[in-house]
Length: 310
Image (cartoon, rainbow, N blue to C red; front, side, top):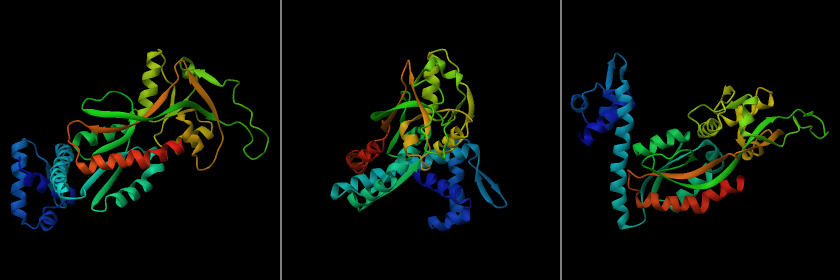
């Protein structure tokens, strides 16, 4: 397998055309076709499906595309890292972040990076922790700021913030008046073993909070009562407000609500549940000097912003 084969395949797959890829790579179409075919023969898989409108990746091609992009990015970063020996670090820094962290920190992250590393570029990918781990393993990103749930082989994680999770319910008071809101129930806390009494509006199984809550409930022999699966926090709070169900979220989710709605908040006990935000890197890939310095900048300048928001 050669790098030029991977580059040819990536360009053709992303552009959907041998003709457009040949123009981008400044080569001819037959040469590009030979490179892709050589790669398919070596891998013993058909990677591209030819049709009248161009080409589309096959299921095997979709998997290979992610790996090929990660390999090419790692090669580029290695070259850029060595170039950094001659002066200020340059090259490219890729970071993946969770939606909650993105909402608070993306603007300042990009601004600080461009000021600190004027000769480098940055890309910010947003996704659930499960996807961030996958992107780290493939080398598509250098570092992730993600929720830590379980130990993951070949991923190094360090907790940076811990947030308690609460059972969030609808506010039954008169939203339009000034009368103090009556509580939904006389409880200020609910044991985890009793959480099955409450219909939950909770993220899908790929979400870190869902996995953590479900695992803790299983240890208590409790099966969650899932009313709806919704990933977006804003949508979850909308449904809670409408009385569809209850959410398991941090207080930051309610205090940062753009509509400034009021909710009933109950502490979960026996045990108390926590979400843990962590910095994660892949032990498979060596960090460049740019990445090392960018992570230091992230910890010094950007993470305090999230801590203040929490």
